[in-house]
Length: 66
Ligand SMILES: [Zn+2]
Image (cartoon, rainbow, N blue to C red; front, side):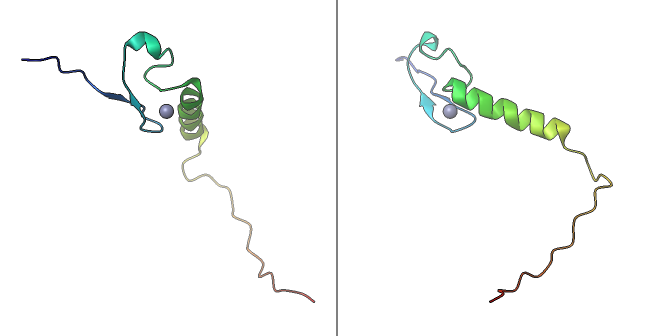
């Protein structure tokens, strides 16, 4: 039986993260950038109002005016 290294993948960009854990200080993300992206998503979900009373502005047909 040989070593069976578990290939970690970044949940944001799905990039493989081989090597020791010490090589990836932003775990479970591949980089600080992906960590920020994930955090942004999380905050976006939290602040999103489920079916709020916000009315969508009617789209005005923008005809090309010459
Ligand atoms: Zn990533």
